[in-house]
Image (tube, rainbow, N blue to C red; front, side, top):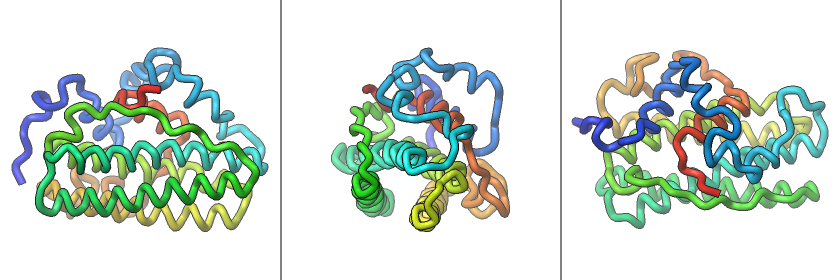
Length: 231
């Protein structure tokens, strides 16, 4: 499949930078641009205030709830992205069918996470409002964005799995991360290019034989740079 020039479709460069981060481009300048307080997303108390410093917090039920709310925010974003992509009418063929499947999966993930948090007597984070711009209107840009989001989801779940106190929750998280990885592989295949070349930007295995865990801070910076979350 021939893709249009992203510089035309992605005027602010957010999708290209997010995709570059997924593919292993860890330029220091990318992360500096997303410093806390520098943008509407990372400066939002609704996002940052709900999370302790996960890397240094001691395992506890409260700690687990914070991690689940972190995951819930990402699932809200993904589910809404696919729903809006479907409703905007810019998708067709296999891309449309995949969006429908992924919308169902991400919505189910979000519902399950909310129920789990409530079963732990925790408070669920409120669903943010989103603005996905052209990414939900143009099929090529949709696929680029879906690839970046799904791979970021894989890195995010891997990054927090070891921080969960509950073994039951760890098992549940593992059952979600495998699905996110299947999503990412399906999107890579639809994008064309060289999805079966190890370590390439469009690969079904962009990190080779082992996926890499990302910290909470790194994931929030990647998501924050897109500007998708407005409140």
